[in-house]
Image (cartoon, rainbow, N blue to C red; front, side, top):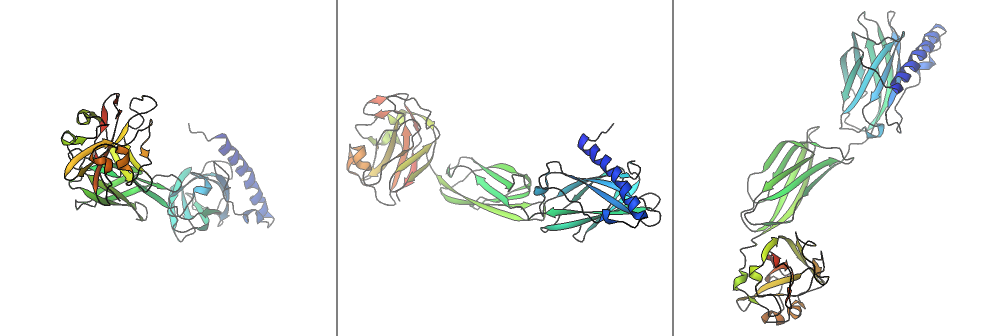
Length: 388
């Protein structure tokens, strides 16, 4: 058998006792009991209000409505569905059955419900405001009663929509991108997701999007692409957009290290190092070069050092490569610029090399590969990068 929580039962007892007041009030011409309009307390985590209804017509009977809000009062917002659960008892404390409930939601819309002990009201207000809800309960004999309450509705909640993923991809290799849409208060968003990959391929659509979707895509040409995505919410059709830039390069096959001349202070057998890391991006600023890769902080450490950063470039039409620094465990950035990278390589044609803006070079990390020091002979795939 269904039982109400203790707090709800206490509210009902208070309602039944309160019903005696308006009955006595009508007899003496005092009806002030009905002038107060109940509303939810903003701080109540289990919000419920008591609405006493006044008999309407000669055959009307007063009743007590318990109106419970699903969620917190401060989470009631325009353009978001609100659920109110209504339970009714008559003046004798008996649950009302086989009746009809008419609700005016205060925004020009009226809904009617078959009422048998309790009913769930679902409604969405389109604008912020304070709304007076009016209830009319009619029993099977035609007797009616009226009551009212007030509900505060906040502004529509902004949708936060993001595209997440690596901003670098490899040619002809599938990459994964996450599309996440949440309301400002972390509630999930439902609707239609549309993704334009920016490469001329047909857009991808997810008609039953709910909060998050991970989609794969493969780019067939190198270049920089802008992913444009939009989420159209199921409620009211509001559209929110986001963009994400991806640089697609042809790593792996871009250079053949076995054909490169290696600086004498660097590992001559770099071409035979095991490829265990993926370089996800390389950034060059006026003060440092950063090589981001998936094995940073995971390779063997020797003498407090994890490995070396490498650079390769074509000098006088021939490919040369060499290390230019040491990397501490997990370190990906070094204070190297175009003006001093050659001096840090030190040996061979790269020792006197100063790259020009727009010149293509290749960067990657490795385990110990300088001055004869070695560990596990692992490396990342060279990543193509133009000097700014």
